[in-house]
Amino acid sequence: MSEHGLTREERRCLQLWFRQALAQVERDELSSQLITRDCPPADKTGEHRSQVSRRRARHSPVSTHGKQLALR
Image (cartoon, rainbow, N blue to C red; front, side, top):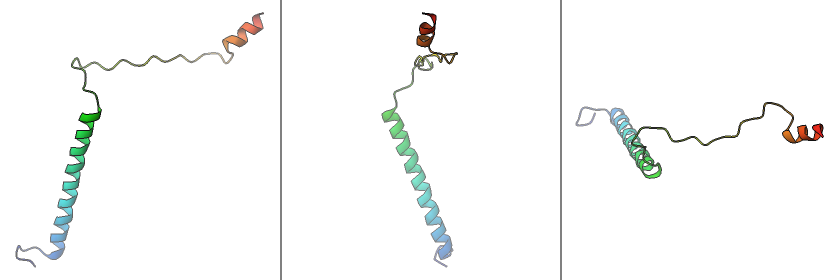
């Protein structure tokens, strides 16, 4: 036992736990800094960003060009 009443194994366990806790705090701080640096600020109105318009899929397997050739 050490002067604090902890065994060597208990001291080692606490040291590992504190290292893990510090690593988690550092990871959280870094991710927060990256988010604030790289992401644009949110709109003040709270609205979502506009979606990019997408082309609609065709419903028939025959292309428009194929239909035109068949009609001629």
